[in-house]
Amino acid sequence: MRLSVFKYKKQILKLLYTLKGQYIGSVNGVTDLSSNGRNEVIVGGYGSQNSRILLWKDNKLILWRRYPLQEGFLCGNFCGLNRDQIASVIYKKPWERLYRIVAFNNNRKTRVLYEEMLCNRDRTVPAGNPRQTVADFDGDGKDDIIQEINFKKDGKRIYQKRVLMNFKPYKGKYKPTILIAKDKKTEDLIDYYLINNKADLAGNKNKAGVDFAYDKKKKESRIVLTYKSNNGIKRYECREPVFNNEMDYLYIQAIGDYDNDGRDEIFIWNPVNKKLEIYGVNPKYLK
Image (cartoon, rainbow, N blue to C red; front, side):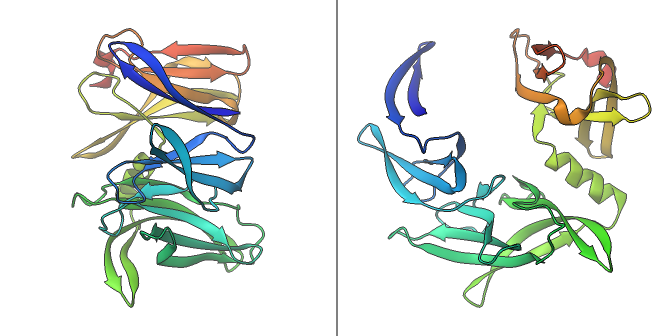
């Protein structure tokens, strides 16, 4: 495996540096953890315990430090510091999911800013990080953590949608205001933020969340577009295309303006015909 750094200039990619090694995996984050004004690269290896934070220095990538991370971690400035932080589940004991927000001091040591036990010895709860994302939910210009967590209560599975925001200093750490969705409007808004893929399909900067919906009776999947407006959330289910397989096996590979018409297209990997399919939407149907 190798990690390469390119510089894009005058429509030409120039290779600057290549780092080789068996521990090199996918790039999982790019963020400023050291407050030096330059972003570090977080690289996952063959297992979360092999995650490495790499620093670009003297025209090459060097190891800044190692830190155990779970897939689906977040990077952002949640606590208003002069550097970004990492939010992720860690395991101090088997089956105990401790959710932590950490920052790195100038000496590269970890400083815990917030921690919360998401579950305690409940083996039926999915491992790793909850479904989560970063966005400015309350419009104050700061990064907020938007999540869907699940746990068992009185023998029943509970799905809770919430926002961790407005972190304030508290007893040497930070304490957030936690907004728990208790009405459909708030749940729909959180669902919109949790959709990973966003696309400007109409070319008006109003991005739609792009996802799939599966019809169990018909055994087919369709693309669903979710828009956020002042009047709430609006959803469109596309009449075409129709995929004759479950949504779990469909992959949105990328979002981008393929034909340079000012509108994004959706790149979908279809495992049935083993082809990469590209779809656009006629803007008149989004009014």
